[in-house]
Structure formats: C-alpha cells, structure tokens
Length: 82
Image 1 (cartoon, rainbow, N blue to C red):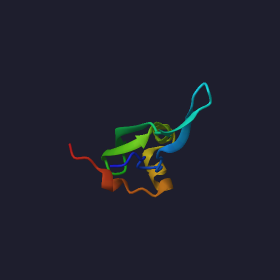
Image 2: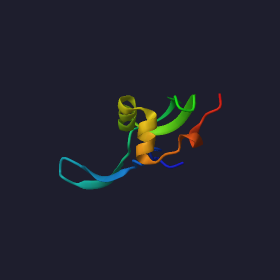
Image 3: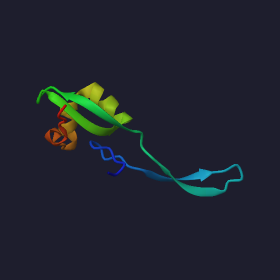
Image 4: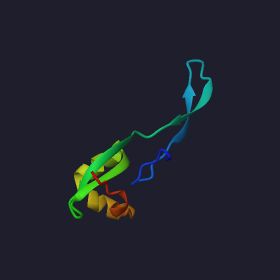
C-alpha cells in the first residue's frame, strides 16, 4: 500500500537536503501517517484508517462523518471486524 492519507490524499513531497556548504541532495519529505481505529457513530462501529496527524486534528474538531463527507470518502469500505 502506498504512503498516502486515506482521507486527504497527502503524500510525499520532493525537497532538498542542504548542507553547510550549500550542497543540495534530493530527499523525500514523508507525511506523518498513523493507522487509527476511529468510532463512526452513524454506523455504530469502528473504522480503520491510515490518516495524517493533521487530518486527525481536523477529525477531532469537526467529527469523522463531516470530514468524510467533505472529501467524498465512503467509510463503509474501511469497517473493521473485531
């Protein structure tokens, strides 16, 4: 699976590592992704998502259902069975 946020689609960014002598080498800046089990109150079950920490803060502020509707994500695809 790719290193991509399931909700926002965040992925790696190309950048340079610049040394003291100003020599540039290419590097990838990866997003801070976490696997999280989040409670979906509409469906009454847990949903397992790979989300960035910035998206987690947005989910805590607005709620998972509102954020999923905003980005056009169907949470039924990510239901976990425990």
